[in-house]
Image (tube, rainbow, N blue to C red; front, side):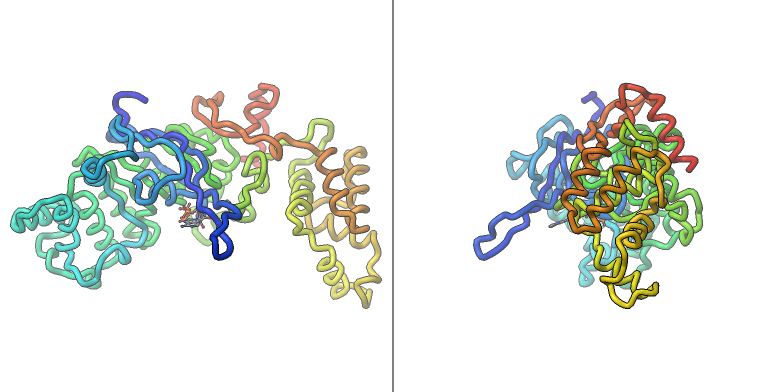
Length: 441
Ligand SMILES: Nc1ncnc2c1ncn2[C@@H]1O[C@H](COP(=O)(O)OP(=O)(O)OP(=O)(O)O)[C@@H](O)[C@H]1O
């Protein structure tokens, strides 16, 4: 931690217990945030980016102690946040501010704009009404509103104006850290740029450090000095924004970047880099959490697959593991599509072909040894021996991605990523060729 570090987050963890029965017995845990670490320096903006459900908002609430973390250490200006006295806690609150995605729900509709913005001042003990009013009016001017707006009510304002008021309220007590949780995602595109520019201006005026949370890589690129990419409760890549955008080292970051290549929102993701959704954080996949969706997942060493075919085989393996391979449904579908009248008339060969097709696996693999393993597993699946098939695929087609959790480590590019591609026999050329294959594919 260097001298200019304002906030230091180490191994922050937030699990929500899943309970059952009258005695609220714990039967599981939602691992919303699972051991993340980062620093924010004075005057810098760190972007926390990832798809919906990756744990970004939970991380923000936990580090501000709006809810208690399960584990980890937070230091603000060198002091541990957590075991503070009431006064210290109050001081920490005054030195930090937060704005949320939906400015409408953050206001009490019965309070005027000015009263809302003045609330933190009253809370922090400023009793002089005139002084409060004068500070609020100055703050309203700072965010591009006017003193006359003091007596207006939230329903009279547009979404963009409300976000300006939210900023005024977050900054009125002169904090050093602002957490902006999806500050523009509920706003029209035309207003988005205005609010982002305002945040940047306020950062300079007030010398703020900012944690900007967004699912949108283009927002992060425009505003942040450094970026931390979050996936399923973990940080998978972290570094200066320019470096991460120029040379992303994690397949997830590459996929997020690929989905923003077109400015037309209706065509985003057309390159289908990122299929599926974020898995359930109550039951995260073993090994690398991204392996269930990763386009660059590492192949087993003794076989030679086309990368997309390997992805399909792994999907089949995962479907067996998750018990989601529904052969009965496939049989029924074949009946509706074909000549057979009953599901039991569907031959094993037809079903095997259908399973391959459902996972984009060709009718025959070009690697004869791999084909032998797959054929045997498919025969077992058709015979209803799913556990045996799963074991066969696991043993023959083993990959480190399903087995071991990668650490967030320095890469050749000079910033950190948590991906086994960077430690395959220490050969960074392997990582480079596979990752660039993903980018070009
Ligand atoms: N109070 C809670 N109890 C149980 N699970 C929760 C709670 N709050 C959040 N979660 C779960 O934790 C995971 C992370 O949620 P979180 O809102 O932090 O993600 P996010 O990346 O900010 O996504 P979004 O942008 O959609 O809010 C989700 O699966 C969510 O359902």
